[in-house]
Length: 426
Image (cartoon, rainbow, N blue to C red; front, side, top):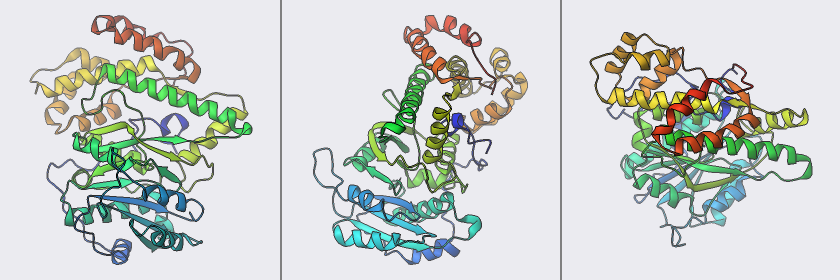
């Protein structure tokens, strides 16, 4: 699992699936076959007032689903008023279950008659019995339903069966999309309790601090107008939403066994869609260490627990070297936008690419995200060293302070990028 080490699970630029070809046109909906057709036939037609389709893949989730669905049943707007009936729906796919997951969903539908809640059941073939396939089936169906009644501006919202969304989860998501975002990653919180798990809790808090500080540093060096500070670092299936238009244009969710949510966000960035990491969109997910996906939050928690018991700390990417990379990305973005006719030799040298090759790629790239992904895969100067988390947490505040001082202070800060002690090459 080369793409799923602890440092890379939460990283923002690791590819997890092949890149589809870029096309500015809206891709047609594929014809339903097999499992997709069986899923479709189990659902009633969408309501005319539908604006958001919430999807939940579920495998043996009898214990968790009641709380998950109860949270969705009490969604309100910013004034605390219930959302209009039928403006959103919830589709739960009980796949390969050996318990009464689907029956629990139907029971909750009777408990909350105002909630438009659908249950479907499938037994996926062994080779495709994974969360990537289940979430892909759900998102494809949700996209088609929204296109049928709400136009491509309708929203597909994903959460998980062990997650409770905040009362304003949908309202906050819609607000971000109305403000211009194509996709919204919500803040995913966990509740780790018990004396035996306090070392795990400390590691999780320190890792979250590292990610948040990195987000701040990245925003200083290569700000994204659609994702301004304050922001966070997460865009995972427990809280991830996007427009049907964006979903269709990237070719749908990449069908990988795990980290399918990360792969989808990679595709969005590859096509220059606007991804917002909104602090206003929040969920609380379980801290279980035995999850349903091969690699996910439960896997990460197990890794951290193992490290804490060995009194070891995780290694993360060097903030100083990330700063150099983000600064180079900002320069490359400006270079690409200028439609250059001449090579940029200093930037090519920094990225570890022949200047003529970089120019040719810049000139043919239809989207900056496509170009940057190519640079990361081919540039010899884009590797980032690993160092202990404690060192990174000491380094980040100093770097942020330097870059907050303004561009005049940047050369000195960037000059220190190769002088961070204790680095270990990844």
